[in-house]
Structure formats: C-alpha cells, structure tokens
Image (cartoon, rainbow over all chains, first blue to last red; front, side, top):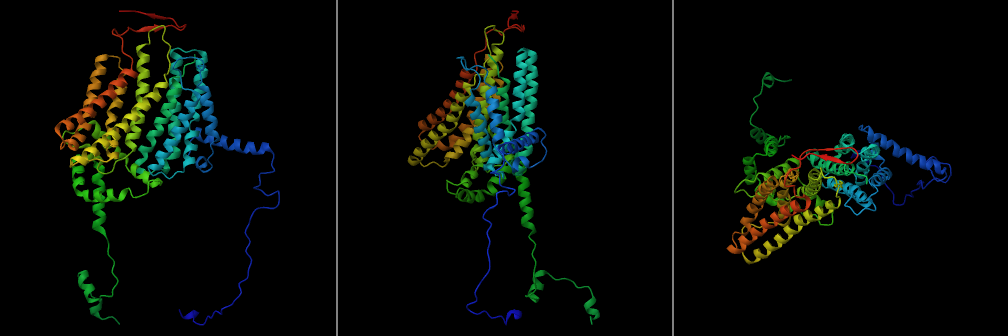
Length: 217
Length: 305
C-alpha cells in the first residue's frame, strides 16, 4: 500500500474528546415522560389501544398493530366476561352442570399457552406473548355470541331459540378461527400451516361448544 | 493488430485440455447435477406413494442413521431439544394417520412411517381431539336418547371432560412407558433383533388411537348393535397396527411370554374402548321412542307406536 508508506505514529499521542451518553431527561416536560400526566390520560390511552385492537379483530385486515403492540388486558377482560356469562346460576345445584368459572379460565389460558408452544415448537417465528395476545383477542366474536345467546335465552328456550343460537355460534366460531388464522398464518413455516391451524380450530370449537350447550337453570 | 488467423472462429477444446494448456486461468464450475437430484428427491417425497417410500427407505437409510445419531444432540434443557420432536411436515402427519387407519398386513408402522423421526405432535393432538370428541359425542348421544322424557333436563356434563382427559392421556403415556420398560428388561435377557425407543412406542400408541375419533362420532347412533359392530371394527384396525408393530419385537423371546405380551396389549386397548363406551354413552332404550312434539310450556306429548 504505497500511499501510507510515509505515515508515522509516535508512541504518546494523547487522545482527547467528549463522549456524551443520554441518560435520561432532566426536564420534567419532555414528550415521552408519562409520570406527570393526569390519570385519565393514562387510562384512556390504554383503553384506546385495547379498543383499536378490538376493531382490528372484528375487521381482520393484514395490519400488524395487533402483533406489534401486544397487550393482555383485552384477553383478560374477554376471558373474565365470558366465564362470568357462562355461570348459569348453577352454583348451588348438585348437577353436573356447565363449566365452573375456574374451568373456563383455565381452558382459555392453558389452551392458548399450549397452542403457542405448539406453534413455536413447529418452527414459528412469532413471539410467545404476541401469539397469546392474538388468540385472546380473537375470543371477542365468541363473547359477542355468548351475549346474544343469553339474550335469546331470556326470550325462550325452545327449538327456534336453539336454531338461532346455533347459527350465531357457528358464524362467530368461523369468524374467530378465520381472524386468528389471518393474523398468525404468516409467521408459520409454509408446509406446516395446517399443523398449526388445526389446534386453533379445536380451541375455538371447544369454547363454542361450551357457549352452545349453556342452559340456564 | 490482429491477424486474420486470430479473427477466425476458435473451436473450444475440452475444459480439461484448456486447463492443462493454461493452468493459471480462472475457472468457474456450475453444480447442476446435484441440484437436479435434490429436486427429484423432494418431488418423490411429496407424492408419498408406498413404493416411493420403500425406495426412500433403502436409499437414504444411511442418511437417517447418521441423522438419528446427530439429531438429539442439544441438551435437554434447551428449547431446541424439544423442537426435534416436532420436526414433521403436514404431509408426514397425514401419511402416518393414513398408515394407522389402513394397516397393511406385514408392514411395520414404525419402520415404514416413523423411521427414526418420532414426533410428539401426533400423539398429543390426537389424544386431545379424542378427549373432546368422546365428551361431546357422549353428551350429544345422551341428549338424543333422553330427549322425550319429561323429567330430563339437559346438562352439559362438563366434569366428564376432565375424566376423559385423565384416562386417555394416562393410557397414551403410561402404557407405553410400562411396555418400554418391559421390552428393555426382556432385551437384557434375550437379544432381540428389533427394539424400539420410548418415543417410537408413544408415537405408535398415539397414532393408533386415531381410528377411535370417527368411531366416537358414529357412536352417537343409539343402536346397541351398531355401537358394538363399530367398536369391534375399530379395535381390529388399531389393534392390528399395535400387534404388527410389537410382534417382531417379542417373537424371538420365549413363546409364552411373547403371546402374553401381545395379548396384554390387545386387552388393554379393548378395555379402553369398552370403558369409554360404557361410561360416556348411556345405554340406548330397547324400543326407540317414537317422535315427540315438545310444547313450549315444558310438557311433552308423546305418541307411542
């Protein structure tokens, strides 16, 4: 390398300069400091995020908002409301009635964890909590179906109400499965997609079965 | 200035001769034949026909031996170790299910389909599906059987799901454990030619339970004869898969012990089927009740033929 042949370095050149590391903001009114805002703002921001995700589930487009900013508030609210609505006043009866609150809770959360583990073991690239978030949010159509079923059961419990409930639950089951597949399908290896989708189908089928067989005392 | 000879079209010699004349020239080699054969092998795998499976079995048996030695090299506390048990594609799972439902006499399920790649996907999800299928079908069949009675109030019977889950998962994991332990013990006394690993036994048991899923759905039909015919049929199918798998492993042993082992396998399998039928599905009425008209205020009007 002929160009650098005449460069010489002496032994003791002092090195000087300045290194600044941004530790944090000292001024209290920076944009990203949320410590001083009113509590209402904090709560409304989280509620708006949850509401936006509900809208994404009801109209599943290929948006990545559900995956990027995952949260588990929405699934918790949905799971608790579904488990509460499945209590048919069978708390005092000695019959082998419907599922208890704890059983619904465990089925939804344990089922979601098992499906997430299954998809990661098969080589999926989605993260653990993102997958839990998607599966939990896609319970929303089935919660709506449960609400409709309870309202229909208030009117009567004959054959017609059963047919209405059946149609509503089947439609919402299809919606849930399609929504969650739309969000999760891209992160799976291509020749194992069916292996990942089938447990999701089974999961929502079990929840739909619990909703459809709900009978008030 | 180029001469006329230089401008004439040159015949290109063989690459070897050219290289011998001018050893310092840069060479480019294109690897075509290897790529073509890889694509052909992939296509062969996708058709999944049995003779192709046989060909693949002899062709890359050396490769599978090597891979089996290298495969489970990750330590058992890492995630990658467990990923090796889920290294199956959709078509492989479907092939294994097909092999358990249509057992070919004389062909070993483990050698033909599993082939040093046992998976836990099939056993786990087939058991889960079977649990929910039995619970749901039992509930539905009881509903249809007791539909006409005025004292009958429908309950979803959710307790039975946990009972079904315990039974089926215990059968699918504890029986293979016991069988594996037994075979290992006999292996130490009698040198058997064929021996299976624990995961391969779990795999065979898991896939052999698949035929009970359509059987459980068909058990909704409330006719005793139909149910028993279905049970015998499905028991023959899945039992034959098990027998054809385990007979080569015990046949070199003492005759009585071999027969007793195979008989115990079939007996446990039958016990599972009979137990599920008896517990989850109520006995149908002797005379099938004629169609009833349920009135809206809860009373029912029945017409007996």
